[in-house]
Length: 186
Image (tube, rainbow, N blue to C red; front, side):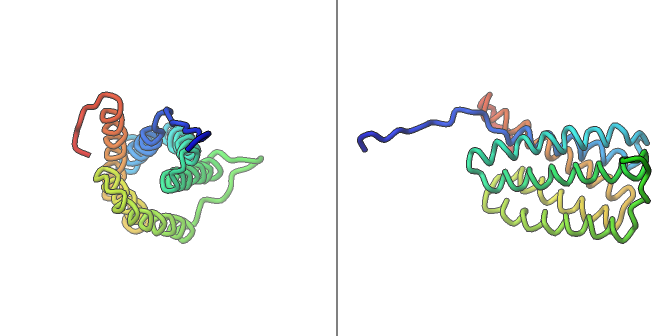
């Protein structure tokens, strides 16, 4: 049509950044749950700056690209990591002039179960997207929430670690495919 202007989006995909954020935060949380180390400050820091901010930045950029799923999923889970980190800080070192009471078993259970339900509903959408690495990552995300809520311990730690590694793999695969035209299974 005459006078029609076509604008081509040449910006990079923010999805790998979001998967890196999830991957690093989940990997270190999994190692903490497994008892590989007891230094929670690194896990909380990773939750805020990678799980939180990296996924939030990816969410905002995917929103600008019109990707409802990516914007919503990365945005929601960024907010999960921020809220999780807040709970850890508020109940250990304190915020606003004092340490809050620890989260109750019941509150923690429902917090994780509700997040698990939302993750599971989003997993259904990943089957429509059809990227196997994203499907696997989301299935492991579901299992992470439910295993931490219901089982805990080494089982939950291993599942969380696997989530982290799957997410890191997804990030690398997306970059290798887009930038290097290197095809690895994903």
